[in-house]
Amino acid sequence: MTNKNKNKKRRARQAKAPAPGGVNEARRERKEQARQARAAQRKRAERTAFVRRAAVFSVAGIVGIGAFYWLNRAASPRAVPQAAVAAARAAGCSDVSRPVGDARAGDHVPEGTPISYAQKPATSGQHYGSQVLPASPDAYDQPLGSEAAAVHFLEHSGVLLYYRADGKGAVTPAVVDALRGVARRQPMTVAAPHEGLPERTSVALAAWDQLQTCPVSITAGQATTVADGFAEAFACTSNAPEANAAEDC
Image 1 (cartoon, rainbow, N blue to C red):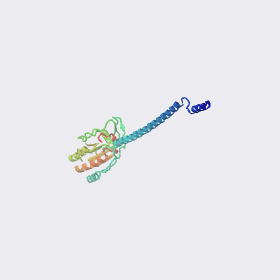
Image 2 (image 1 turned 120 degrees about the horizontal axis):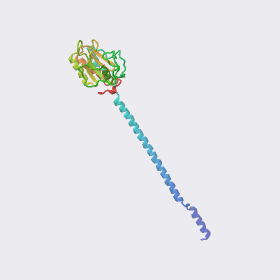
Image 3 (image 1 turned 60 degrees about the vertical axis):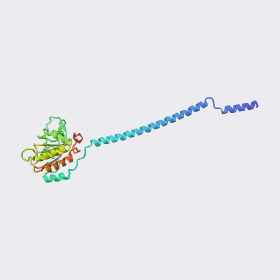
Image 4 (image 1 turned 30 degrees about the horizontal axis):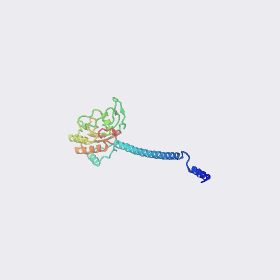
């Protein structure tokens, strides 16, 4: 083979051969591209996982808030059962009504502040924030010591079953026992004598800004049905402004 042909073959091989370091450079470039692709894929996966976690936490938060609201939401006032309405009419009781004379506010005032109630028994008005009638015991033999504490109890969605215990217009022991029985069964309901009931009123059923009165002629059976219906309508309900503070609901 001539020198001329040898030189041609040498030049052809040199033209085909990669430049020094070219193979390693191309390999490094491919590895870098693969690394970047893996990093991008990992970031996409992390973003997807973050979005999913955020969605789960959001749903859980909404459910939790809803459950908290539901558990702490007081029931709406109910209609007085028809049996109680019929018994009240038969006994000569009044309809359930909003009393006239007392402000329908529930302002807490410092203990010792003079308070007077135009309506007897009081169903709303100012009272001491530091005093509230407890839900237990559910019956008293003597009049309640503080009408302000009783009003505070009504503000917490309580129901009070008052009765005249002595003198003209006093109810029978059977009626007293009937009211005490209702107080035992119904939540946030207390039975007690009241010395200041108006003339011709022997039983007075009180909730926050709600009142029903009955005459001395009411029987024990009628008292049970009327008082049960009244308590079912108002005890532990949002009829009262601080129903969620009730201790016995």
